[in-house]
Length: 180
Image (cartoon, rainbow, N blue to C red; front, side):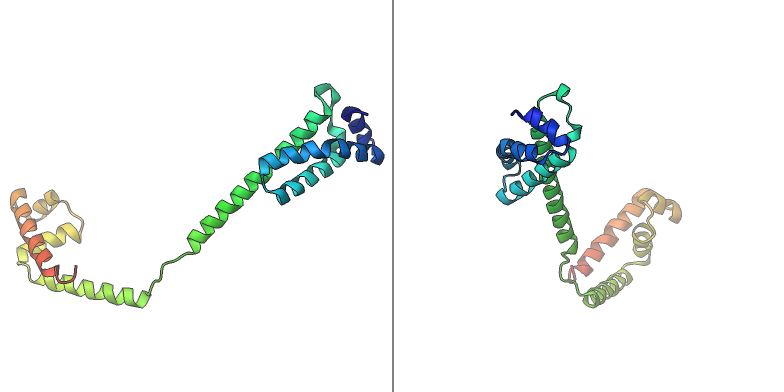
């Protein structure tokens, strides 16, 4: 008996027809699934799921739209592709979680102490600048003004502000050279 006839009988709940159909299509189903999934154990599981789905959904088969074997192999292919996508998504999810869970060693107290010492050293070095250099550097780097805005704030020519900034930053770099 051909797969088309057997599948129609399976749709009616005929267990004997399902046994025959199983014997007829289990090899091609497993072969197709194996080529897509590659893992033998996963392939067996997917093939089993396809054949179980075949028993449950045989009534959806429409002989007017194609052969039973092509319909069954389409079910198998879709299920195999779903399994591969699911496995890939799970792997990517685990990798993302692993990356998120991996935190480099971090000592918050040591970091805070070090940041505090650096702030103190910067304050010390700023105090060593002339008041004009300190004022220009503070406006630009702490208050966020551009050189042009600093010049406007101090009512000085832009060139003068740039010179003060350059000289002040040079002195800061020299002073901070011991910490950087």
